[in-house]
Amino acid sequence: MKDTVKERLVKLQAASLEEPFCAYLYDLEGIQAQVQAMLSRLPERAGLFYAIKANPDLRIIEALLPYVAGFEVASAGELLKVREVSASVPVLFGGPGKTAAELATALRHNVAYIHVESLLELRRLIQLAEGRSEPVRILLRMNLRTSTLPETGITMGGRPTPFGLDEDLLEAALTILREEGRGRVHFSGFHFHSLSNNLNARLHAEMIEFYLRKAAMWSERYGLKLEIVNAGGGFGISYEGAPPFDWWAFTELIGASEALKELPGTKLWFEPGRYLVANHGYYAAEVIDLKSSHDQYFAVLRGGTHHHRLPASWGHNQPFEVLPAERWSHPFPRPEIRQEKVTLVGELCTPKDRMHANAAVERLRVGDIVVFQQSGAYCWTISHHDFLSHPHPQFYYLTEGNDYGDRNQVNQHRPQGCSSASNGGFAEHAAK
Image (cartoon, rainbow, N blue to C red; front, side):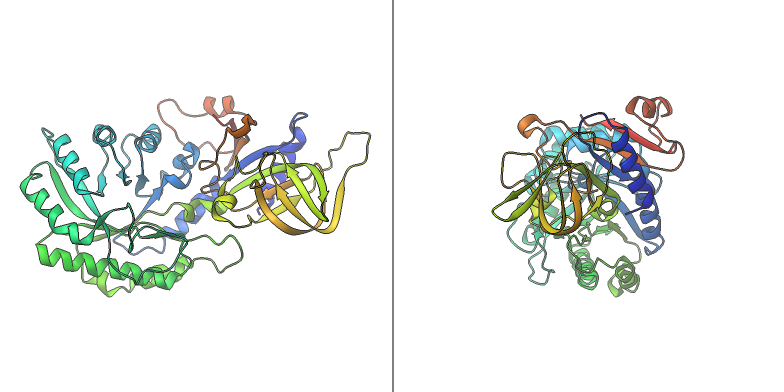
């Protein structure tokens, strides 16, 4: 964890009122630096989009705006969040259950491409596109019939799923485009997103090679102009000590891809989410009690899975660090444990509210801060925030420059008419 993150969290806790401390901190500088490093390794025809489902925080979208090729959204609500930041940045619109109203919203807000996932969706879009001066550009999302995909905990292709078109429906989709969609919908290429959180860079590159060869084969068979192959995301984050995804090895393999060389006019796009932001978010929760039960220790936190659901959802132990805090104003002894194993739990009335089981700690006291690392993706936004109606955490942002202390100061320093993240500093807002 960055020293600046540690220092800031300790200061924020010390400055907080009598309530126990609970907050997210997002390192916007770290996100920007990582994306710049990733872009420096991409092949010339490759593009990087951010899938905001991983974390749709507006300050993160603002921070990424100058660097990514655009954003991928999976709902009209996510689209409107991007448009709040920029009216013109390219947006890719995906999702397996788009309603007619959502498709109409996508057209009104000028999305760059729509990922079509069913024949019915294609027909809906053709109907909505009637009378437009320019055709709607689409990518057909394909569910491949193959058993060669890497194994991960989340798989959306190569097996029965609600995602995309089975490849044996491709000819039917192209017939609809030719007979019903001419002048309204323009086929631009294929979209593939078969799995999530893959840690094996070599296997991921082999999967991309397979995508490219499939797309080239279909292009030749059906006489298609293949402008884009969108290979989705799926680059993994290691939460429990496994070797991390090797972006440098992956991009070297992609740069040497024979299948890509055989498609000289085709762009290759990626749309990762968690890989861009997971390692640059921190969830800090103060220890409010220490208990011994049946010869096991439990640390109860101000917070828990209603703020940070990822470890409960994925069944892993979230990595953490203990930040000692010296604040203790009570006349009775301060509970503590030394050289023990402890399970970190939240404040909810459910035994499933666990963040890390049987963690070895050198020292832990009531009032110390437990900082859960790698908490930038799929943590706050997938959580059941209002279960038991506990307070929401605060949100802070690590940037370069001035130190903004509250939400009003952030808004005052944001230029009128835009949402630039260039002002910098630490900023805070109360979660809505």
